[in-house]
View 1 (cartoon, rainbow, N blue to C red):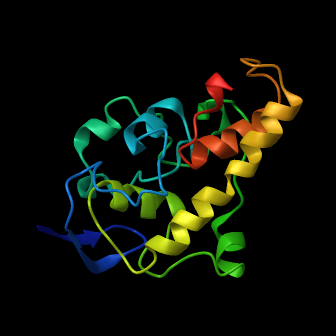
View 2: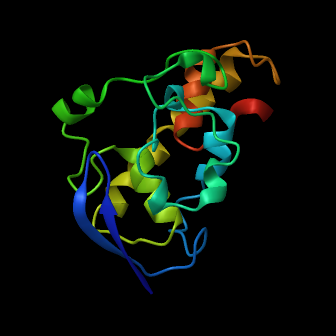
Length: 166
């Protein structure tokens, strides 16, 4: 088991334990199709995610990451569209847990690295709820047509779903 102390722009002094091996021992209802490293390399969140907290995660996650340290740049997104709501929106909805102030993807990165947390059940449920978007793509798009519903595809990518093969 490893203890991690976080020190970045949004969180200082938060400490958590990694009790599982990275990328292993997931809840059986949680089967993301992409790792955080794959998501970062494909292009998510306009490149403006985890730019100030690289020390918390493996360096190889950032080797091919499409990042924009200054501001979001939707051209860096895989589908080159904006599929994000501002963090203030997520806060107002009550969807942000204080231990993961950046939201779901931060939770997922920490979960991937082995942290298990009281918020896991809720976050897995939120991830599972995104599956409805896959059904919509299958209903409205020809298989392999990546130009069909790019916003919905980018949103799925933000939740570790890979729609390229639908």
